[in-house]
Image 1 (cartoon, one colour):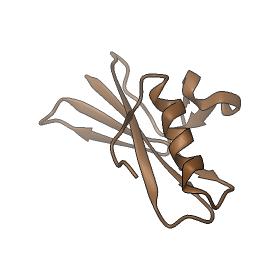
Image 2 (cartoon, one colour; image 1 turned 180 degrees about the horizontal axis):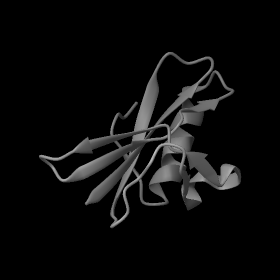
Image 3 (cartoon, one colour; image 1 turned 180 degrees about the vertical axis):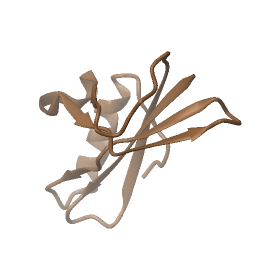
Length: 96
């Protein structure tokens, strides 16, 4: 099945937010509480899975990670974070 990892990125002083996602194939079923590692996470190194949705019609698992909250009031900081994720193979599903 395909696994789609999704994460929201926002900043404390900005109304807008964005979402990023990464898709890969896996034989393993993701579970709430498991840890996901990706080079895009930088110093964080991993996030715990918050929720998992199974879409049987599409043969997909949707994995929801905790939101990233940047301590900033500049929308460019969110865009910089998205650029960093993209450089590690992620897609932006809600551009700013």
